[in-house]
Length: 248
Image (cartoon, rainbow, N blue to C red; front, side, top):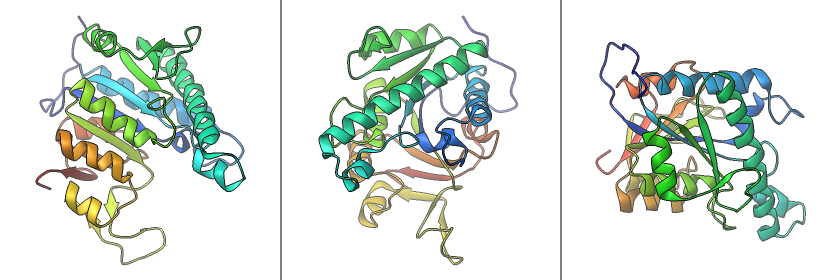
């Protein structure tokens, strides 16, 4: 069994779903879908909590390569575009796997769309077994269905895997009442209820994902991945980001 590293605070969460957007991997660099330095920093954060003994699942998006909604704007059929986006998540998932394995983190990639030469099919009991064997599990290809986002995938997998929380990494330090990059008077929420998030139509996650988390009582923590130790801070109970839950 893997030995947990010595830490000052007890672990607040034992099993987590880490939701990463594809855009996180490009480091803000136009024309480079996966920036090597950004990929390494992201995986270092995953390794940091893995070394603490946390059971980690990752749901990765594909927006750095192709996003179905954007494809529709270019004349690509929405269903076709969504499948293209799912394939983009597979590329990102393999990049995460390669980087984590080089850091000594045993990893498995599970795909919602069968592609046996590249990834395992998603099988719930097998995914659970990987966690028991101290492996990081990366879920790719979304839910395998068009019209469902990777946010919804994170909510679905968190419910299936009985995760303690969804940790959604973004480019801002939480949820605001409006875009903080456009409005200086934007107000950050420390906590929110699912109902308030749905009522205000906050775009940090789509309504299907919020509703699924509401139905299954899965809390969501939205935080800034640019803080190099953000995930560890959340795992050990430090107050960061915005927590969305039943009670707010």
